[in-house]
Amino acid sequence: MQEKETIAGEVYLFPNALPGFEELHQFWLVRDEEAPLAQLVSVENKEIGFILIRPETFLDDYEFAFDEESEEVLNLEEEGTVLEVWNILTLNTDVAKTTTNLQAPVCLNVTQKIGLQIIVNDEKYSLRYPLVKNGSESEQTEGEVG
Amino acid sequence: MLVLSRKVNEKIKIGEDIELTIVSINGDVVRLGIDAPKDVKILRSEVYEEIQRQNKEAATGVGLGEACKQLGEMFK
Image 1 (cartoon, each protein chain N blue to C red):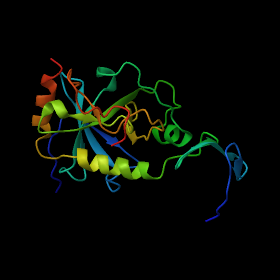
Image 2: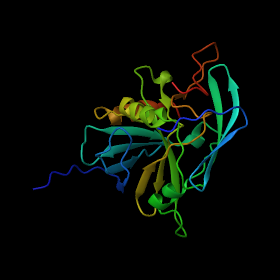
Image 3: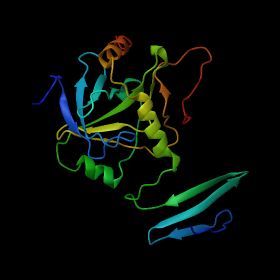
Image 4: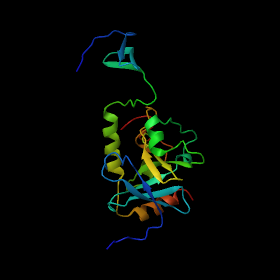
């Protein structure tokens, strides 16, 4: 007997799982109706989930190249493939201290429901990019890795 | 492990397609240039571990919906 919660979302296959969670290959993607956010919840372990954000929400130019393996895993070569890029948020009890991982975006082939977390080989993209910049002097983590 | 000594601007060839160049040496920091085909993944070794750690820190199961709502407020 299968216990399935009705989560209103789509299931994505992550052939390469996620770094740190190498045993998890299927995730629900639940898009937020209003905000540029989504939840990524493990099908195999509902205790594990992430909140994703669209980078264009706060970055004007976020560019990276796909290596050949990534292109293959994501099946990007097929015509008409829709690709979406999201970044994982690291939450904080103080919402203003939320950061996002720009160094390892989650790329989704929406057409075929395949996902892959890519490691961007560019030191300028931070693992913990703050979503909210303080006007006064703040802990600037931009450009640094940890 | 093969250990070689090189000076600035000297190079190392690995296999047919990969070449390393010592771009500069500043104190104890060596800048390496790497010429390799697109299908060869090149990472500073600690990067994968950092991503693993960051994912683990970011993972949350309980209260995802709540957190999403709170964050959503930021975009209104």
